[in-house]
Image 1: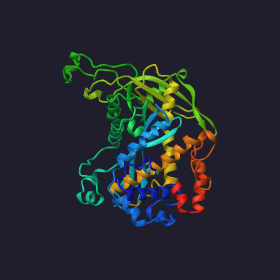
Image 2 (image 1 turned 180 degrees about the vertical axis):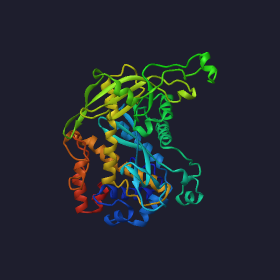
Image 3 (image 1 turned 30 degrees about the vertical axis):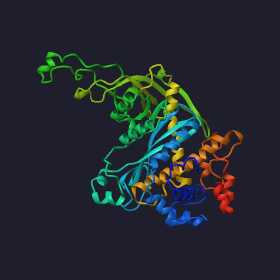
Image 4 (image 1 turned 45 degrees about the vertical axis):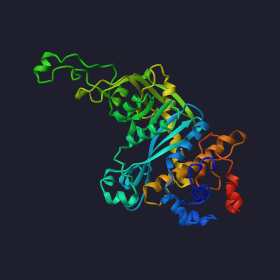
Amino acid sequence: MAELLGSLRYAKQRRWAQVYMRGLLLEGRRKSCQPMAGRLPDGDEQSLQQFVNQSPWAWTTMRAAIAHKMTAALGPGGAWIVDDTGFPKQGRHSVGVMRQYCPPLGKRANCQVGVSVSHATQQGAMPLDWRLYLPQEWLEDPARRAQAGIPAEAGFQTKWQLALEMIDELRAWGLSDPQVVVADASYGTVTEFRAALTERRLCYVVQIKSDLGVWTEPVRRMSAAPRAARQRGRPRGASYRDAPAPQSVRQVALALPARAWRTISWREGAKGKLTSRFAALRVQPSHGHWHNRPEQPLVWLLIEWPAGEPAPTKYWLSNLPAETPRRTLVRWAKSRWWIELNYREMKEHLGLDHFEGRGYAGWHHHFTLVMLAFAFLLAERLRRGKRGRCRLFPRSWAGCSACSPPGAESASCAASAFRHTHDNPSPVTHATI
């Protein structure tokens, strides 16, 4: 805490940050200000509310410190994983809330959506940055903007644009580039997102939808349209329109011979090794070909078709080099499981989705403090994990058995300290934690 809360200017801010952190880390069902203040001997609801919702401290400075410390702790290389999650809400006054697709519910619902970029290695994964997705109707309503404290410079950005902004911010903080950027189909299907990563000289392995069009043979713009084509009213000059019709990646997958598929295992699961069938081939995306846009470079198309399934289930594109082994593509494509695990742990045990404030600054403050609490637990696992198998959360906490990755080293030896503190809430013990 002393190291990472150093960005807070005032002693009073650092004090209430400590109190808020203990509230997040100690056992308790609800991690909003009122119940946390009731559980802590030095808790004060009004002071916690003021610290989180009104106090003008810069969350980006603290996040940069967390990012530098935790990327160093997790080791070099690894992936930056782009993802988003939803936070169901009642009413219409919480900043950014509207009826939209909510990933945890798998349907449209009244919710907020947060976009994150996380750093993941074989040691674990850590969220490095967050952005709140602001729907256009919020930004076009001056009264709602003023009430929620949305900055004047905040304009509408799609989720993939928010992800790129965070990637640029992480690089501006001086973090080393990852080996790959990983994202699901809501980001990977967007041609502009993939092109922006390529322009930044970042490698990616991103999931795509089954209807994305590709050519299995390189197609280049023809030097001139044939005379017969011009007579039929087609424009003069270079054109793609006489090229072979592209196919969807699903069509490509179904046409592959049996020898194209290989069974690959990528990690240990709860019931043994996770294994499936994969095919990989070089393709050229065809987006924009009918509008005569520049041709796109060759990339990897990775396809998963589990045994027993009637059709392929998942597809990825990657701009990794042509000599990249198929097993490496699979390993990166399947690395997103860390983020689903992190979301679940932060929501169930650290109150990520328990924030009850309505303001823009309060949302980012709460998420930053949850990141800090998670960083503490992950650092404890990395520091003590080799000395014994412990859990990220105490066994007494409901649901914790479903949250620890199978076969992983312990995530915290602070479990006994948590229990002791909960049973004996002395100021000295609290300060120690």
